Length: 452
Image (cartoon, rainbow, N blue to C red):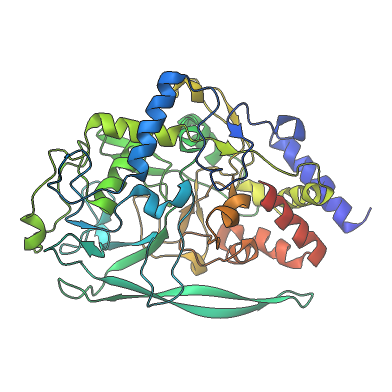
């Protein structure tokens, strides 16, 4: 048996140990066979007429461009006073991922910069900067100066495979310019592109017990995921985090309300205060678009919409190259973190999401990804080198929906190969196995990823 055949056999042996086989790959009624630019925007199959109407209301709010208060109708006003973008869809175009700028002259249009100081807030989370808060808002409504501007320059790094193939990796260099409220000396920063928003309800429906069980599995290749324990504004207690790039938010409702407050400046019952800091006088003196600006019914509809966005179905599963790549994915050890299969529980908030077999390719746990991807900014129990395993479902359609595709938390990777090569820390062994593959096997792995 040659080396490739052995890896293929090992891959399917590991699949069996994970309880995963081709027979289990049907995603139990949660996928849609759509490869158009609307592939990330389809509702879950099975919504009744009332739920479809609710889904449509949430979709309208997600796509809505919010305006400055006061407006003529008052329904979607309250933007700012400081904000990053005026609509949810601005950072999550077509419900997919955002993009990084090409260079320092281009504005961050679907990306933001997290800020904090060394230390912790009262609940163990990041300590906001006293003058700028916890993220840089680069836009203000008329009369309110923006906090500043983020400029990204790219440093290129050559890489060569053992077989001679070469490419250029890149990493961002961030500069904070035109700061309105003084210098940001000593500040911790983290660049973040907008992540996809489909399938979130299914991820929320995975029981907490499942996440905790996965942290107790045997250590393989030095991989040992862990949960982030975060303070929930919604429930007023400590919970397991699963949303956000560092699993720093416990629920989809809280994630949505937090983004509305931080990214658009829209208040809600969970986040009722403007994001203005004490030194931002013009910001604090602006009018409000109601109290709160996003009422509970609107927040419910926004959450319902995101919770019921379907997942694109797998493609080309019978292609021999894709099948070889699938075996490589397992044999390399990728599935240790990008777990192929999970099961939702019977206590999910929405009945349609209960007891579903899903294939998100994530364990929703934190993993040390090495110094190359480190942002150096802790977030609750996540340290500066740890990131939550991002789901891979739908990743093969990214370039056709929002080209060019940008991957990893800061969009540095322009394709799957670059993304894999940035893996280190707990993922170093898998990355080194990928580097050692012959070109044909690497292409098979990429074909598999393209099929997800």
